[in-house]
Each structure stands twice: as C-alpha cells, then as structure tokens.
Length: 216
Image: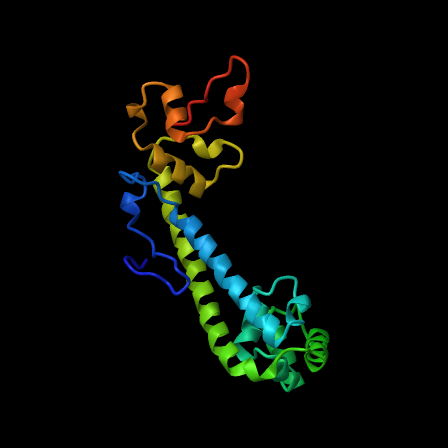
C-alpha cells in the first residue's frame, strides 16, 4: 500500500493497518474503504460525463460500462468517430478476446452502427482520450486499494474477539469502523453510555424489555 499521499480523485491513500482500530482523539473519520468507494464512484461519474460528450450512445451498448471488455475497448478508442473508423475485424477480435468469447461480430457491428449515427462531439476526442485514460488508471488503482483494505480488515477482524459482523447488514468495513469508533469498550460503564456516545439508538433497543446484544 502507498501511505501519505493522495490520488487525483482526492482519495487519501491507506494508513498503516496497525492503527485501524484506534479512534481519532477529537474527530471521527470515515473508514478508508468508504473513502475509496466514494472516490471510485466519483471517477466513474467523471468518465461517464466524458463519454456523454464524445459518444453518448456507448453506455447503452453494455450492461455496465466498467466491465473488462468495455474498459479494454476504451483503451483503444474513445470517440464515436474513432469507433466508426475502427477496423471491423480487429474490433471483433478485441471484443471476443477481452470478453472471453461473450461478445463477437454482432456486438462489433452494433457498436459501429451506433458510432456512425452518434451525435458525439468529435473535436473533443484528443482531450477526452487523455482524461479518460487517466480516470481508468485511477479506477483500477482504487479498486486495487479497496481489495487491499478489505484483506487487511479481514485479517485484523480475525485477531480480535468480536461478533458485530454476525449482525445482518454489517460487513467488515462497517464493523471495523464501529469498533474503531468505540475503541476500548471497557471505558463505557453501561449500555446507555455507549448508546449516548454513538448519539443514536438502534431500532432493536426500542423493543420492550430488550437489551443490547453483546457485540464485543
């Protein structure tokens, strides 16, 4: 992992895992995995904005613009004009190879047909290509960092006695964030004080005669 710098999408790179469960002394921070997810979404939003300018019909051709076959295509061409002039055989082979046989000639012909009728702005192609390639690289880096953080979280969560991840809807990232906020649970004399610290009451605590489960 890279420490102490930022990506162009504004993501602070991962802090050392050893400090992941230490709460900030004065302010509460968001988990790194959540920051990575938000930065990833921001990069993808920017990429879709670029495509809307140079090839707005492209998004409708794939179930997800960010599947591997689509990413591979966008490394080779960006604007509608570039796709329209792409050699059909090469385009077919590229689609077939990058999709592991899922796409082929039909998809290539569909892509070129849409490109030839596109209302995309061609003169933006050069600038769009550079920015889009940078965003694709950022997305790959962010996804790699997310995987690294999730692996580190899984290892750390296995090293401490906890049951919080057994609750429905609480995964590794959320569970680690909660435990990081709480810190040493022994500093709370009662469940009420823990709830007051969290500044919220979970829905199941409002049930008559109910008590908080022992999460930690």
